[in-house]
Image 1 (spheres, rainbow, N blue to C red):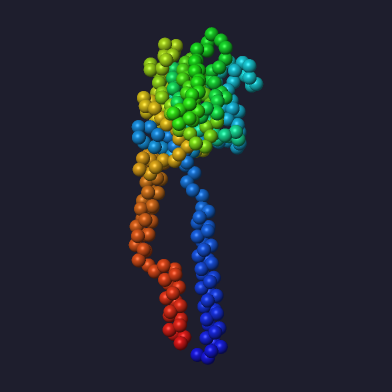
Image 2: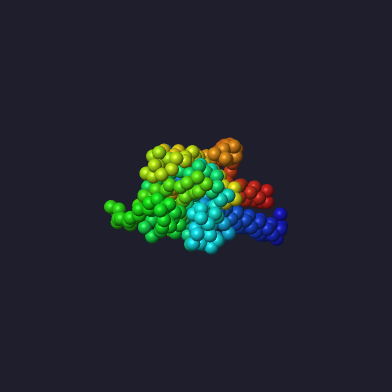
Length: 297
């Protein structure tokens, strides 16, 4: 081959090799920017971990979202209950969820459903609350003979110097009513534990003969959240940390989809193992160089 043609061929080959390498680097950069799994929060009970997503509603503050109404609010109501969460409420059911608003992350609990439940009594002892947070909704918190709810709140320092808070709350409410609370200010690093007592185990059980039959954690879409049943007799820990794979249990309404995802992941891993014997990009590039020069010279 004449020298001029060899020089042109070399330049074309090197240019193509550089372009291929740049494209490979571009793909790697795009992959590195892919979003991670957004299920960074979790709830743990009895050694089982469930990934959860905070509910949210178009930047609506949690206090407005809860919409606690009394005769002194506008709009007002003599039911002393949450009207903003009525679509989430269920009869004889206590619900628990995280809510993400413009002023941070909140822990929300609501017992029973307006105009539907038989009444009830619940006691929550909540430990390791961030001391910088506070109860911005106490359902109920009015002064009157019909309000027997108790709210005990205290802060203290742990052995490591971290300041935390503990709350002991007891609710009792009549048929057709509901009760609950909002604690705002969980922050980015928390691990809050709730020790529940329902019905006859609750401190104010003598105030009402109604009964809570189900405890749920809500997650995801505020209009149609995933509902996962919790054990009413065991404490739960809500954490800012994601579940570890070995302890994660699937959410009840997504079992089929998660099984399919698991099979797909297994197949992908097997496929990856089977392709490990293929030459790398740079091995192939070197082979192409060698083949080019062997045929050219």
